[in-house]
Image (cartoon, rainbow, N blue to C red):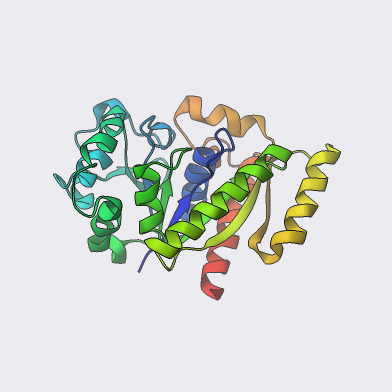
Length: 256
């Protein structure tokens, strides 16, 4: 039975999509069966997984509106080793079209149920806002992985996300929890980042993943080639850090 995880942070530009595609590729590399769900209308996680979003015949939009199943809409990314439930600009219209429909915040959860036993992990890339799309991701998930930079404003964004998760748990998904915080774009030479990292560990303890993703040029270059960094340059420090993170995720799930 698959474990469903949202990669979420209400602050933009913190590496959610980079984390989603590289974690998916890292998990595939260590032998896990993975489905990556792109819930962002920009479709960056789709193109970053080697899938042309302009050529998608069916997407997560069709799944949310119940005109297609996950099995029909998913595509295989052979280069990356995982399945993709892709997104394109059609998804921007889903917010409006879902306003009056029943169970609108549980559409993704219900759609994933028939394929749960086909995967070990389902990773959901959420948009950087608390929208109906993000709500669908949070309602479908067993937990949330929070990528964050070790900067002051990131701490403020984290408190907002913690409050959101608390509200969703109280009203919609009692199983939802923060699985862990992942420090990304980390530069150990910057004193502020070291200080914030220490604050995170002091406040959240074991919720902070041991893996740390360094600021890495090869990770930044990879999306322009339509690949996760783990596939684009496996020898890069950033890629190796994401594979280490994938192993840590597998271990954490076993001990949960």
